[in-house]
Length: 112
Length: 122
Image (cartoon, rainbow over all chains, first blue to last red; front, side, top):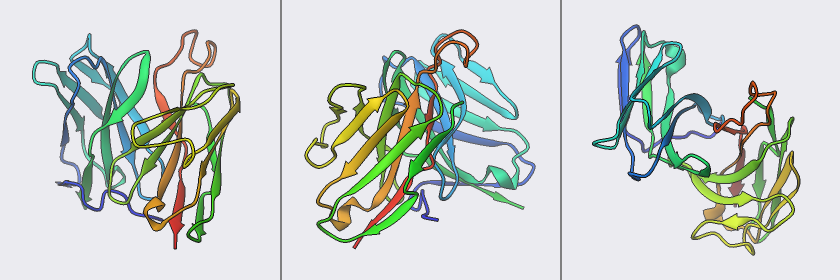
């Protein structure tokens, strides 16, 4: 399949370690944020979202942190697995006033 | 989430021709969008497909080049017209807004993507 993220920043992580992927968002009025995972040859897959009235939200092995003061979003993946290897995108919008604006993306490479 | 399918999954086309991409959702949704993802890049919104009216295009995209249809709440098409090699990209359909019942009684804001159509223009 066609590769994505050929020219994106890469984060290499040892299997079993925790991963932290960062994103600086652009619009201070944004109040809704989503992290997507995109594997090669596939469409983006929804991972987790967070609203601006929260600063942390946890899912299964993933945590999203939101710092509105510095317009920063992070995705933490616990006990990273080879299947986590993909390109990760953050996206933002003003809820109810779509569409989403996507960040540049980060390629996560898990070393077995 | 809903099941989103796109046809074709990939195509190789000649310069100057047009290709219509279909997006089908297995449940009614309020919003449908079309994105382009050029090789090694992030996603760029082309337009919002409006049911029963003309699509809303983002800056840099025009209806003559990317005509869009949305005849109902589950289906949309994007046509890439008069193609050139610069149009080689992944084209992605996205949906948002599921009716109460599917989402436990409230409208969801999450936006979900189809598998994409990989277009190569020679």
